[in-house]
Amino acid sequence: MYLLKGNIKQSKNLPMVSKKLKLLLALVGLMQTASFAQSTDANWAYDSTKASNKVQYNEFANYQTPYPSKPRGMWELSVNGGNAIIIGDRPMFNGYLGGIAGGVSARFAFSHVFSARLGYEASEQKIPGYKTYIPFSANTTHMVNLDLIASLNTLSSYRGNPKVNYYVFVGYSLAASQVSKGVEGNFKYNGPVYNGSSAGVPNLYARDENNFIKTFHSDYAGNDNQVLYHNLAFGAGIDFKVSSRVTLGVEERIVAPLTGIDMLDGYINQQGGVRGGNDKYAFSTAKIGFALGNSKTHTAPLWWINPNNYIYNEVATPKHMKLPPVVLPDADGDGVTDQFDMEPNTPAGCAVDSHGVSLDTDGDGVPDCRDKEKLTPQNCFPVNADGVGTCPEPECCKNMQVAPATCSLGSLPSVQFKAGSAMLSTTAKSLLDNVAQQLMANPNCKVKLVGYGASDKKSQQLSWDHVNAIKTYLTEQKGISETRMIWSSGVEGNNTTVDLVPTTEDGPNTVPAPHPNLSKKG
Picture 1 (cartoon, rainbow, N blue to C red):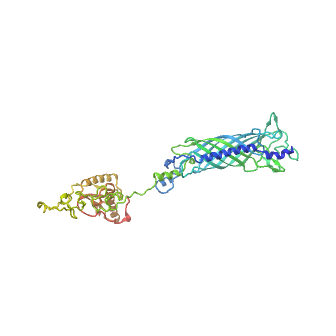
Picture 2 (picture 1 turned 180 degrees about the horizontal axis):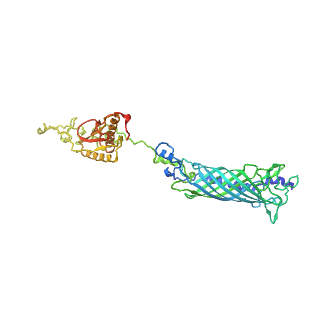
Picture 3 (picture 1 turned 120 degrees about the vertical axis):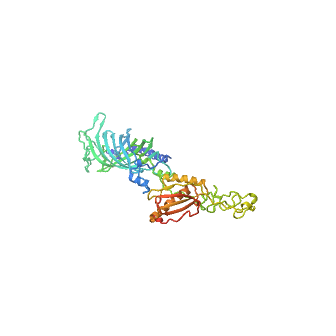
């Protein structure tokens, strides 16, 4: 029996180690497969109803901060069950596969990568003895666990939300274990057990020189042994998303006591006065998880959402990005952008066609804006620089005077502004739309924009802003040439009104802002 002393330590756990190694290899392989399994669904917009910080969200929505609020994610309730093994001093054989384990946990996210989990785990095991002189032992354990979890594949620059989440974790466990001697056949073991000590035949559960069995106590009547102790836990797992609410997963968890405990398997391996290594737990479990929370106010748990989705969606289809207004260059100001303008240097005031080419009604090569004879017959070609042909003028027409241009427009409306504002109201824009139609129907007419306010610098600038707002709307939105507008601002009168007066007179179509530092931007 002395030979047994050196053999127990050497032969311990060999079948168990092989099984654990196979399980870990399978887990690693599954993780590698899962790392490439991600959804291309990257649709995700920040919603005020799902923001965790409403103040930050409002600042973000009003462009006061570039950082959106973290979304309010659901939390997950999961139930697990599976195999539990004690990695201890006793050899595992005779078909021993460990015990059973099961538990429940709640997981909530700190961020898209890190989350915390609070859970309860229970296990029960019957550990076979060695031949006939070490009895069976029973271990019943209850644990309360607190884990910090890191999701490894949530963040990605090239894929959307993950369909599979694989993670690692480290945590703390408070465990309570009950270890008791068992029964071999019909024989309840109560007597002393020989463990190779030359000092005699001490009981298997007697104290050692380190007073180790102070909390593991058993008398010769076979009473149970109990202990409460602290543990370090670590491991890894994989979750598979079955639906928006349900996940399935597997997990491997190792629990190592923080203090020297070598009694979880019911046996202290002590040789030559030196006690063996501490016992540990290994849990291999499958689990099912349920996302809990109102989908109208919560997103999926954050470890299932890639936060880069928002950035890439904004780049592809901006919804929040503050973009500058598009300005199309028009060097000659004829209303046709340079990209499509076939006559990039049209003289100011010349009417053009859709290609930006000056209108030439009679085709004599002189644009209508400079042609003094707009309908020169072709038999009178060529024409001079003024577009006048070579045909002699009839006697009856030699003394005719060109009638001055007339404007048949009636009165035009006045545009009202709110006090202190230069923004066009919906009513004002509707009035200006009607004015634009009338001007298009009467090409000989111009419109004089009379803005009021001359009492002080602020009023003078506001009058200029009012006239400029109307001119900008008619030119940029309605296509009226600015040469048909006569500028008049800073006139004594009501500072909230701009009168539109039909005219055929010439005058400036723009003037510098009198006090630009006081300008209103709408």
